Length: 420
Image (cartoon, rainbow, N blue to C red; front, top):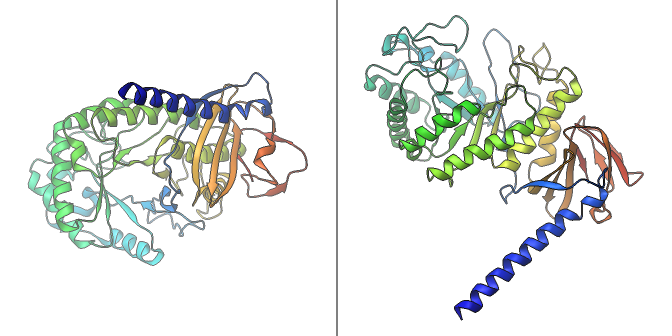
């Protein structure tokens, strides 16, 4: 009987493998090049993509006069309200800006992700430590507090004041960068443990996100933080999937590395969020490619297993890919792409996302029984022959336009296209 069961299992695995291969090979004859072959398939989470996935870093600096975004967003991460800005001296609080933020979130019914970070110079154990949070900030912000009780009081004060209004908290910011965190991994585990305990005491239903390292250089820090027990003091694992000047496709192996570290440290069952990423140094000059990067980043992060993505940033004006123009309101091509890809994906289940060896990507969406496909090529422009089994009737472009399909072959390039 045992041998029979083993044989049946082998047959089941073989049948499943054959079905998966045939499903992929159905696409191959329809590619622009007959030599194209699938080289990687991502299998996303098997549930509907929530609106909260499309979240945003919004700076809302008081000097910028930023109106509320004109497109839907699923949530937002705060700025300019770190510990050093809230408690200017011991027990001297300034909640004016954070009160405004909480009021805006109440008005728009949109959740805040609040970062608990950056030690005031008066509380820092390293008052001379350099910081690069923003120009003009004092040194010492990257140091751990001299007295843990100051940290506890800060966390409890903020959590109590905004109980029921802020329910998602993030501990620190990019701790693998020395100018953001100058303490040890153990120091940060201690801070995370104390913050988690207090936040859950004040609001047991709140969500706590772990400290989020950034770029490839953050992988060893994440591994060490989790190995030292930090993962048990978080509901969500945070990371910043910046890939320098590379294309969004470079996020895929970086996300895979983070997930492997999570599995190694027994926290693979926890959600993975990207609480900040975009392009902040150099990116393509053309509006076409900027819009393509925005859309591909959101498509590929979900396909790779990230369940919430806070783009950086809505209104910031000194980065290569801006979503709004200088008036902080009018959408750029990137802003239009964000709105478009959000409409395509929200509420749908992404069943698979396949890369072919010529740079072609095909991602399948199912929305209440209706199947559609997102198609692009990361390397080149070309043509794609639509498989007849897709029963396609229209293509949707990233600029929001929709066109009927007049022939079996459609142009495919760097910008994702939705084939309905």
